[in-house]
Length: 281
Image 1 (cartoon, rainbow, N blue to C red):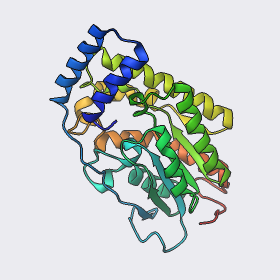
Image 2: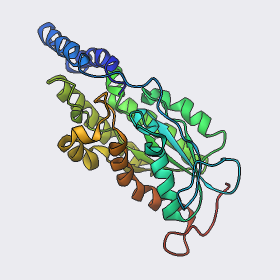
Image 3: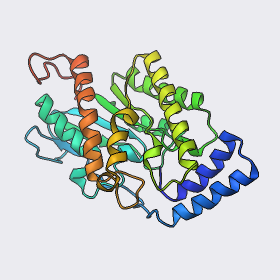
Image 4: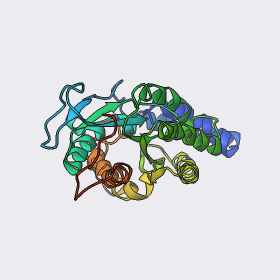
């Protein structure tokens, strides 16, 4: 979610979702104004360090030179890495480096994710990715959908449609489902509870749709929320909405195993951690 400016939209969405009375709506609006005074403004754009990463940790190198497993990041600010303090702390870089080490082959990182994106805005990202379909893609989206009038079912169906497009092009896809917005403490109560309920319901709907099409889903809420709730000062950036480098490291550690498993199942291995065959890179 794009920080303080998202709170106004979240208030509007809360009224639409919850059928709030005028008094309740006014209460939430007042809470939102107070929250915006303590939430810092994030950078306009996250950092970027796309390129080719080697098993020894070297990178980013020229992406056009040498064979590599192509790995795309799609979605919102969590996929783009907004809040990371340095390029080497971006989630895509951490994952590309770890994948190269685990799979014992170079990995080419391409980031299509855009901060603030909602599920309807995933389609143009997939359009760009399919110009040169990646071997592997990680999609994280949904946290901003609470600020729209889009129903939970429609949002999940849109996600599945875009994942199907990637899969049809031969891309192995892993999706991190919507996070639990209750971890964002500057969102006041009861607005935070409304946002959390929406996000968790969306995550469940996303998983149902992904299961239906045979795609892989990872529950970000279940795996990461306890740590973020316990250690907010350690894991959030200065804007208090987005993870910092340590937060993204925690997320990458959770996502690495599903990504490695997905690649191994899709491409075949002849031993611990080594790809036996390459696919179009």
